[in-house]
Length: 161
Image (cartoon, rainbow, N blue to C red; front, top):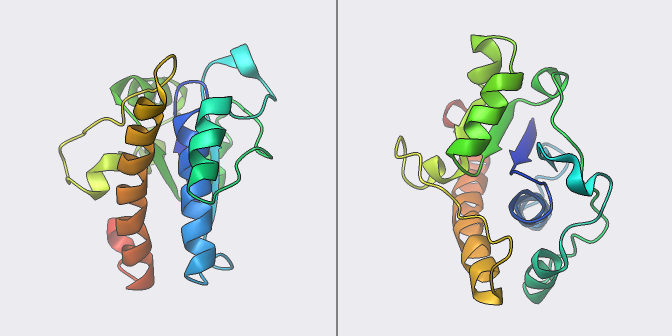
């Protein structure tokens, strides 16, 4: 199974989500079964590493995301990934514009719907904020990834894919 995490610039939330889920997959010996990547929509930071505040927050939790590089969502991602998680409604609308059909959009969901199904709650964008804002986003993502790991471990994949 392949999972894609998406945020606006792919320099804050989605790199943290990729790193958090990678660590949880490895810790649970699921990294041979599930892989994760991240991307965004804005090319302002193309090929750059995650924003230093996102990297600092992740590192505080024992996760190194500095090797990641920003990339943009492409139509091919709908063929490559089984599940695509967005951080907010803006991300959802951007994915919808790039998607080719309903089949593509059936793969897309809000990350926080893992915690609160059907509520479409956002992970607030910490860009331009404080360390507290980055920590808050990290904790929201971490909580959702815990639930995702449990679903994968329990082979409850219908609710993931």
